[in-house]
Length: 431
Image (cartoon, rainbow, N blue to C red; front, side, top):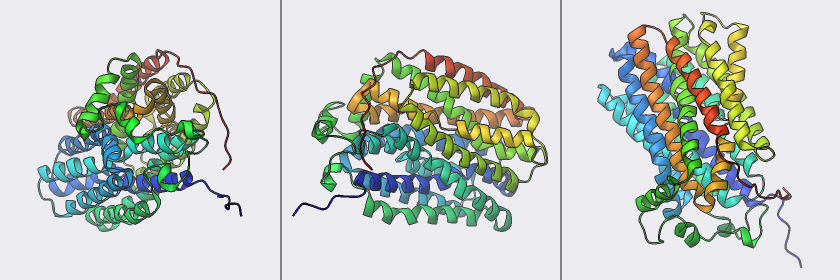
């Protein structure tokens, strides 16, 4: 009797569990901008000091990524992701006891930065690379959009809790949200298709990269996690494409997580807009980010990713340059248009960047992309700190917005300068 045909390939279950893991981590990632003013009001810490904690979080979020990819190779995706979610929960929960700014840096910056960085884009690259042969652009777009969906779900809730009950109950809510996802990951996320007795989605036996071969492409099989990550970096730095992607992604992080996500709410507050209203606008960014990132994944499967990146960065430059006059005490049509436009462009850069990384680095792409993503978060850390210092020094964020626009023009030039790589022939596979 023939075996019953599976209706849903296990790759989609792995992608679903990954989406939920990223969603849980995004809960805390969406809260810093909402908590800046309450922390400033309660403790008297300067915006610059709070921004330093933000920058540490963002930097570690990125610098952890390449080592997280090696950890997933060494210990398995399921163990690393569940452990990372627990770290996020612990770091967020313990903030309710802090009384000094160094504790904010330790918990909000270090612990949560390491926890969220242990998932992030390294997880997306690993799951997509192992489980999918076709639909990679689409799936990478969907998984990247988990951060937008997390922002959409958590940000208005966190803002409302902060307004009515204070920032401590909000931090505990985020902690609980991360813990809820842990059993889902343990039950649904397998490390490799072979663990479920299947081939990668849309692939054949020739598309299966054994674990030993993946390790040998970056480091000897018995090398440590750090050695694997560093060896991948040593190989990547000799490739021109790596540096161009690093430069572009540094600017991507600076103009999204570093500038807008961290400082949009305080900037709106400067112009008399309530924090809950500004947080609601960032939630709208999350809605359209979901749409834009999935659409970008679909486009990446069909068009030159270099051109897509150049267009995305160019449009982002225009929108940032037009932002400063749009702030006011109420929402106007122009501000709403900015939010929609910026949302569509928020992390639409990830699917084409992943595609270019895979084309250039093959099986070692997850660890190499971890380093590229590290540059994204270093850019975010840089912008989060500099924007806070600009606000303290000038009393306005205007210079920060215009500086971000100039950087985006540079990113567009870097993207189009990447040499064209031959794309793999498209294939189809049933759902």
